[in-house]
Image 1: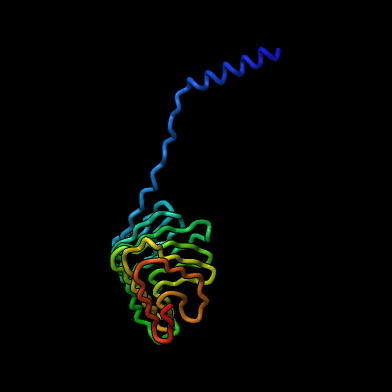
Image 2: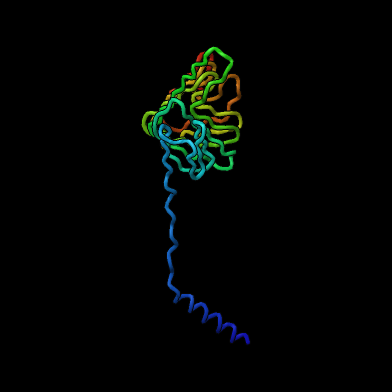
Length: 196
């Protein structure tokens, strides 16, 4: 009986040597999702993002490549920390002048990383984020995290509105985690606001 089992094992091993080895297919990286912040239309939805009422809301991992200029559209990253949204800013220019300075009304934030959300930003070309009153140019709310990627070859000029930081929090809010690993960063706070 033992000879028979050993013989079967030997036959199986020999047969496995005859089976051709098929290399596993390596999947390419996901194709980046391109979004033009200046021309996107209301009701546009895609994988991990949607646009409504002048707000591009990113909830997915991406990768996303955002381009274009806007004076009324803005970006919110709201992924709850379940993923890190991979976002490339390529020549983005978002500048708000809400016309409400010296009132009690909050302006609009050009790019906000909402509470508990995480984002990796890669900078290509010249990028400008200018927010309205009491908002940071690039807002990183308490509990959120943003990393400006080391592979960034571009720059960003982030300007806060009255009382807002260039990069950080708006008004008297608390700030999350800011990691700057690359790119050229110019952060200008509004009146009474910090740079970073």
